[in-house]
Image 1 (cartoon, rainbow, N blue to C red):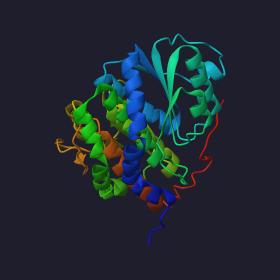
Image 2: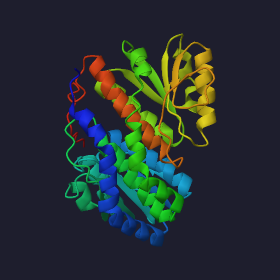
Image 3: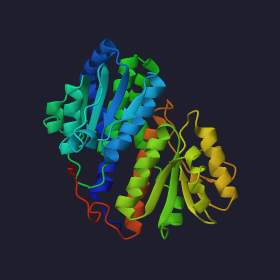
Length: 342
């Protein structure tokens, strides 16, 4: 019998955590959205690291697709190490951090506020330093996460940002899709991709590709390969892969293509099938492939929520892969739960 890890349990808490977020923080999210609608900012910036930065990348694509506002990621060291001031008048700066404690994230949020941005913290700790220096806070209230690898805090952070955008835009279709998301995420837990696990059991390097919002999910997946399975994984846009990295793809080289049901799906499929035709061992979350091996997925009711279902299936997969490789995903070497960088 396989061991049951903290990561295993926390992955299965994700649907309920999302439901709790929507029920308990819905009013706060709407209040922040109303303020943003009144402000009419010229642009948005994000400040984050690690899995939180992947949630910020997902937010970037979602914001640009729904609002038409440009979103840029600010390196936290701009404020903490380089002591530089940025021109942020009439903008919004969103800091995303599970702990809300990293000094460089906090300092960048503090600096952004001083330089004229409306600062918003998305955090699992509403009493954190990040929350205190920000103008407004959205508490994801995901509960304690004991595994070092973030799972439910990643998804709740991503959903909090998406819900903020949906109410800011008054996008009724997206709001409804988010309300139905917990059930879709429960369905996603049924897909842990045993064929892909078998293929990767003895592999130590691979590419993970996506495009648009699913590229953010590919980044998160690549990180999880490294920190839970000690596998060197690199994330690329399916378009960017063809600009150089593809040269190392040889016969049998593994590639995971994370395709959502959006406008990018055909382009991801094209790259996946091209790589498979060249001999790569390609798995893809789509029904459209001709050569690459399809993976089961839970389809949601909106293109922007589809990537979130994919990451839940991926989490179920990666936790099992770690166990099958003889690794405890709760305690990756050289890592700790809260990383505080200056």
